Amino acid sequence: MQDSYQPVFAEKERVMFVFAHPDDAEIYAGGTIARLVADGKKLQLVKMTTGNKGSRQEEIKEKQLVKTRAREDTQALQVLGLDPSDSINLDLGDGQVGASLETVEKLVAVIRKFKPEIVVTHHPEKVLIRDLEGFYYVNHRDHRNTGVSVVDAAYPYSRDRLFFPEHIRGGLSSHSVTEFLFVDAWGEMDTIGIDIDKYVSTRTQAIACHQSQFTQERAQDLTDFFAAEIDGRRFEQFRYVRAD
Image (cartoon, rainbow, N blue to C red; front, side, top):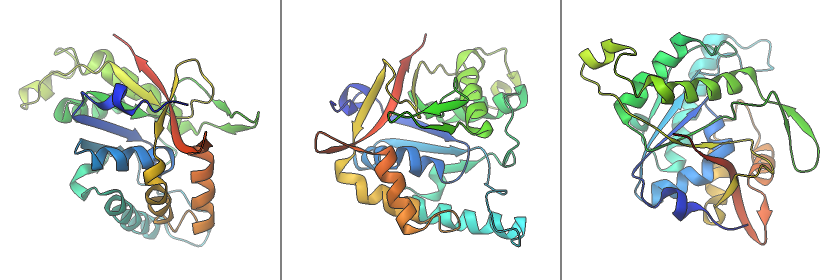
């Protein structure tokens, strides 16, 4: 696999990552994020929910979990080289992200404010994901609704001024995004790889910051799965789409 970092990112300065839950960015794209930070790019991480339902510990209180996950999220950002100001949370409710106009409007606002040249997000087309070994896993409802909503927000809603004109009256301006990277893209014809060999330990450490969700061993397992070694190098894989 060839490294597609330069063809995708060389001419870009502003990259937005939109994921459903606080740990998704690290799991799917932690190495790419760390590489972009090291390259001096400006990043905006958007989390749709606080992950307030994400626990198998029945005795934990939801408010306690929200505080715990917020603290873990801040620690992970620091590992990746980001500041808390580089991350925002739309707080839509874990398990409650809908592909609604209300969700689209919130995403349009952050797109119009940050003005990314490319957006990285969940795969919008699949309910069940099939990996290269032939095993399936569920594309979480929050994930697929986030992916669909991001595409809708980019086209045409953030571009056309007559959608959500209150944004324009409030000082924002329209913005067009035509490039996307989608995660969970196994073996598709437009799948590309980003070489993150130098950032493998960084992404694993960032995942492990989410201690309410993962052990250190599990964090390593996630890196081995989502940033597998190919031809002696580690790659994160994405579906790269230009849509005008």
